[in-house]
Amino acid sequence: MEKIRKTIDFAIERFFGKNHLAELLICKTGHINHTYFLRINNGKRLGHHVLQKINGNIFKKPVQVMENIDKVTSHIRKKYENAGINPSRQVLTLVPTVTGEKWFVDKNNTVWRTYLFIEKATTYDVAQSTDQAYQAAKSFGEFTSLLSDLPINQLHETIPDFHNTPKRFEQFEQAVLNASKKRIASAKKEIGFANSRKNITSVLTDCLTAGTMKLRVTHNDTKLNNVMIDDNSGKGICVIDLDTVMPGLALYDFGDCVRTATPTGEEDERNLDLIKMDIKMFDALVRGYLESAGKSLSLKEIELLAFSGKLITYEIGLRFLADHLNGDIYFKTHRENHNLDRARVQFKLVQSMEEQEEAMNEIVRKIWNNGNYPPFQASLLDKEGSLSNNGVTPFSAS
Image (tube, rainbow, N blue to C red; front, side, top):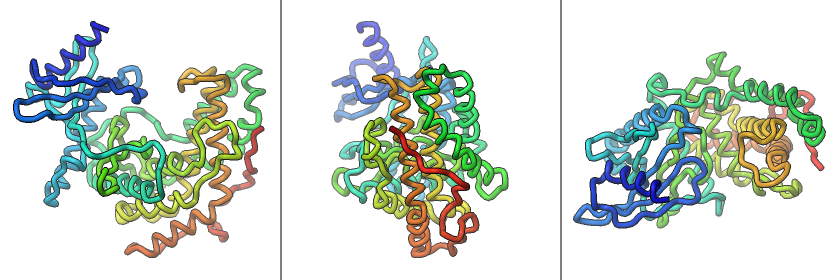
């Protein structure tokens, strides 16, 4: 512990010099990076900051992660400044070292950074109301819109094929081939569910290939708790946790927002009767996202807005299922069949979305047509108003 404290003190000195630390608190809720809350006495006031050591086991090229973050935050900051808005609570602020660097690499090749702490704002793991879901989606939509003119060739792809669903399916197929008989038997229904929906895996990547969607700057971890909600107004003010920012598709972000904000139960709930997609939460997400990002999106992105939630939920279910078949080597588990339980929840959520697909698309239509946007063109939708299931059967797990 003494050695760790010396390392932390060294990092603090790199950013603030000696003898300025007033208080140090260790954040115990983060799962990837090591995070510390600091109060720094600069001689005038106590400033609050967040010091982080980037996990090099997860992010293999942490300097590229930081270069992406610097590009994105600088771009957003200029947008707010040009609009006459103080950006200090609207975008993360990297605090430079005493020598002017925005991060530093220590002797162990570990990258450290410091952000200004955004005060009088809170993050929530679960939406307390539809308005909170709306605020989060609006913030993510604004993130999409503000970065729509940032050339993607200025960013690194720090995690290749992160949301490439066809490749995730290939990984799942390989896991099935390599799995033990016991693991195969335990997941027979889930394997069948996954295989029966192979036809949806390439919908978004096919659009990219066809040129009806374009690569954008995407967040890639659009959980509710990655938006700071102002304590007084209740409005979303700042998108945080930018480590996975890189080129991607806008619908990856919206889809993951749907996946994480609309379930009625926990991610590892064993009682699948408790799991469904909350259509009211979905409505709130669509309203928030289109209000801020609608004019930045293509018609094809609008057409597939509802579908994206199903696809990304299915993709994460594939990843949980593949990890179960591989012997639980990636996601942390705390009980037997933990990843299988997670996969079952995702697949049950997919089934719930399929059952409400027509209603989801109708919500998108109404909100889109009520806004000041071009007419909705449902060229990929069948006559009932939903993407064809192509013989997909409902999922049930015992």
